[in-house]
Figure 1: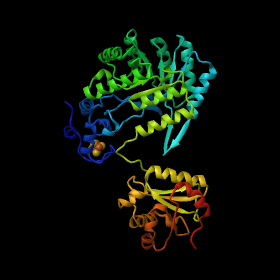
Figure 2: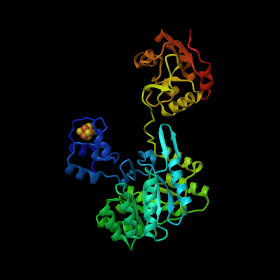
Figure 3: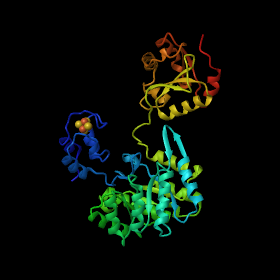
Figure 4: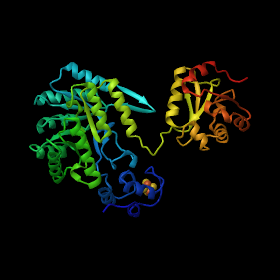
Length: 451
Ligand code: SF4
């Protein structure tokens, strides 16, 4: 029987210390019951309680860690079918395939692009996560030297080793040391040897089925052998088959608690088409529908970026607005004569406004007022960005110690509160800024503090 939040609360210390990141033990217990947080996040529960609660409250799709040290990612850990029911937990891992029969130039190019295509957006670094290394020649020496090349040249890549030969994959995995790769994989014929290898090295193991039924059989056998950390490749190599398998596996795991499919899936758009644009389309479908890992044939900025953006959107918690911290943000080295602007803490607003200010190259102070993640007009309408609250923030934030002038630029959409704000802040001149962030550079270049 699934444990409820109250049942879990009875086994917690009930001190409400907040060290788990949740303010009360009850709220923590509810989150554990909902599979949204692991019981181990509370440092005060005993191993016995961890075991009791951990098994009963584990997410229906097991969380699998790939990598080690600073280069580690989690896949799986999902608890729902639809993002709006709760949220999706761990973003689909995106990776690139390299094989032992590729030329050095092809391999080097892929590794170089893995390292160089990195985009920062709304404060999040977006990039590919994994390099999948395939033994396509049945040559252990070539495979281990390719693994070594990736280890040496892609320090933050999480690795997937692909071979059906346990000796070959074992040699590659031993070279990886603490960077615990995913071993892909275990089929009907080599299951036992692969399972023993994964146990010995403490690596997650990939199951390769010829179809979903076959994958279930192998997974069931591995679970019986005591393996816990599995990733499933159902063998699907068309978009339709992969989509159907992903949906079937997710429904079976979430709705029926069917253990053999309670693991993240790995999919290979790289094997589904030779057309790079079609490959991206396939990948986008599989990111949206439940793939734990998606492997591409190559990485190019113009095709990887939309996938990264899709992933960012899908795996953002829909119930929690993205916010930045209330603070004073110095942009491009402001001094005591630099303009002072204020806006809300909705992160998209912050990054757009900050981006335009930085683009203008006019050193500025950007004040971010906590509006609970609401945008400027919505926050004002909700009473969270009114003249009284802005004045309180200006008086306490310390900006008056950083500038000689007393000129505050407010968002153009707040023009109607200018008079009220002047009454609240009698020492300050209130200037109405542009309505659109795109007009900010021209505005700032013209700006002079009020006399
Ligand atoms: S860390 Fe443990 S004791 Fe502290 S609030 Fe969280 S659940 Fe309660």
